[in-house]
Length: 347
Image (tube, rainbow, N blue to C red; front, top):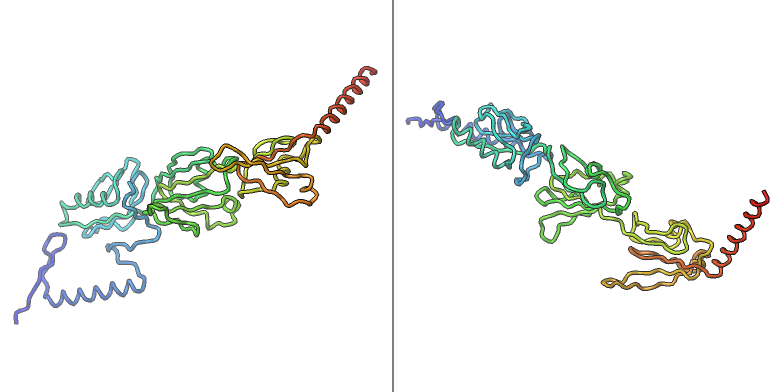
């Protein structure tokens, strides 16, 4: 029986002829070997397509720029080593066989097509896969109550805290949470609080700033991804006005309400002419320009004879003056003024 032979083509050229049963035996051995290696978690042999790694980012929409790193697998082009290539400052890659190729402004898929076209003159039907290894130029948006809000170009891997620092840090009027919005193609935000928005195109999460800044929950200091939007809302404000030592607006730093007595302490307490029993909270009515009045007897609160009241966002605690106390205070001031004048005159 005449032995059937099959010619083997390598890179478009006929190399050698082998008996068909030899080729089949080799192919079966190769398949078994690969399956065994995968089962054991072994890496592919040099020259084969690298397995996906957790550190490799693969969003097809990302546009390459200077200093980005890519890995390239090209079937039949052993001259292209299995190592990362960095895009130079002009946006080009220098590859063996393929030569100088422009990568800046292209996605990984588009770059793979460009490399395939370059290799087609020396390799028949080249197959090329390009994967992102490291993103050096990553546009992120940091907005809200930060020093320098806007779009920032981030080099290399950065955490949430590092991104806030790059944006000038937090302002005094920053709220108690930071919000992160991420495009779903970059993966969902790795936080328990993360949810998808109604469109399903974004992952959204909130992180408490106190725990983040004080390293109470270091796992929430997540790595940022390109096109992340980091929002630091302004803190809600309450006001203490009238007969207090430090009148004005105060921020809720880590909560949504504050006890009246604590708010009073932030305003450094009452003046001598305050009418503590006639204080009141002016609270905004939703979808209206009006406010409702809530009577508060600070004297009874201070004596522990009344249930503690709380201030909410945009509340105004108003402490009126006592007419009798004001008259007495003015008389004392006048007496001190006359006495001082006499003393000065005698000297």
